[in-house]
Image 1 (cartoon, one colour):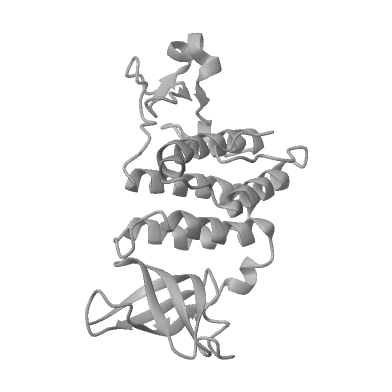
Image 2 (image 1 turned 45 degrees about the vertical axis):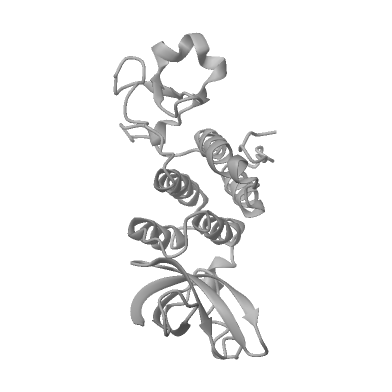
Length: 256
């Protein structure tokens, strides 16, 4: 058995004295594991850093085996990802999100999105907005996608201001007004009009929105907690946009 694919390093785990088991996100074969012999060598350690883009060749006797990777570097961005808090936490948080998906299940659009986000993690505004959209895409692939295109009550596609915590559907400002205190805020940059850039307030609301549904549909049923890296990323992104916003934590993303 053999195949070749583009991949992004998500992490590695020591295996024996000199080898590692590498976890990668491939474009056509999803999240995949493989043994890298001499993966702890001076030549390979810089290549096998989270966030780096590589070309992998996987070989195994049978498809269900762990198999071995031969790894060739393509884009070594790991050093740059160590320069800002949003990048350090962001690459870890996206890896944790991808681990929610079944291994070897192809999600080429998530691979493409990951490539784009990794190149924008140094910019907090861009990184935050792209990360929220990545979380929405993961929710959708897990079967819990939100419907933010039209009002659940009226069918209107304009002035959408809320999201129902029960249905995960958008609600217009007028239809949701009587229950506004029970609704989740729909940030303007996530609306169908999409003509607003994310700022600190709208980004905080977006993190609460995705955090709420990830907790309800994914983490709670699995007996899990959100990765600590998500809280780190959220706080770093918001602090960079507005130093007055000091914390936004909790598995549901509700601010303190």
